[in-house]
Amino acid sequence: MRISIWVIICLSAQAVAVFDFSVWNNPTCSAQCHGDADCQGALGEVRVTTADLSILMATYGGSWPTSYPDLRYNPQADFDRNFRIDEGDEIIIEEWLNKRNVPQDCGKKLELVFDRGYVAGGSTQFIQWKWNIFTDYIPLPPHQDSPCSYSFALYYAYPGSGWVFIGTGTCRGPIPWQVPNINMQDCRLRIADIDHPGLEDYSATFTIYECQLDPEMDSDGDCVITIKDFSYLATNWLIEPDGKNIDDLLLLADYWLACGNPYDPECIIMGE
Ligand SMILES: [Ca+2]
Ligand SMILES: [Ca+2]
Ligand SMILES: [Ca+2]
Image (cartoon, rainbow, N blue to C red; front, side, top):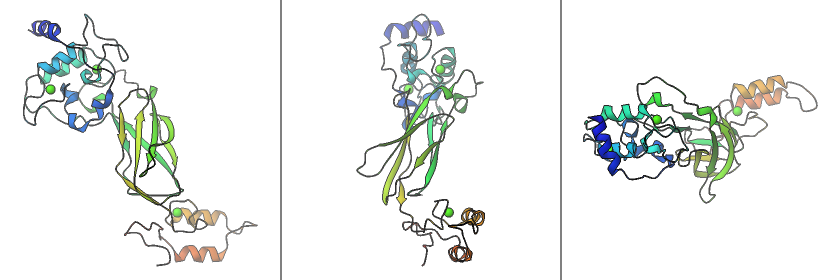
């Protein structure tokens, strides 16, 4: 039965666009990892059909394509997202073919981990991301996923700036970001997989603010006076020529847990 379906599909299959990996990070295509190659179908309806099977079979030319960047490779049909198309993907589509209520829980392959609403200008942030392996999507044992072989580029933007390059990293991340000294709302971060075009993710918007605290007191640059600043003061106690003394301690005590973010209504501004 399976072979007869394949013969029909092979005869009618059209070549499809390849090497655009954005389908793996598309929230409107959240059943792709279960065989929905074309991202078509309403909630509760049959989503995995012979149209999806035809996309998978278009990659089959008597044998499966070895791996990306084989010309027959297609990210749409790589349901377990392991950069190969083979029997594993065939098993997935056969499980869901012509069934209703296909799970729509595929999530993103590349996920930027950043949920800050405010970031202090001049501070250093360490930006991390997640590279979800296919066992996060389907209940099969893992095999030769090799996320550490890939490289990523990180960017930030504020209104009118365009994307400003921050740096590159591997999946072992994070990438340090020296935040510019600006006051700006609606800033964003973007991470892009250099090797797989279209595979990228964005943060929600956040605000970069110029810290209102004296940097002498906020020694770790996070714009809140905490035990970290106290420990810096303690370790530099009375070390000449710029040693900390009792006046510094009193000043620090006065502003204990004060923060210097003028945008944050929860923030206790220094001196107020
Ligand atoms: Ca479909
Ligand atoms: Ca695959
Ligand atoms: Ca601090």
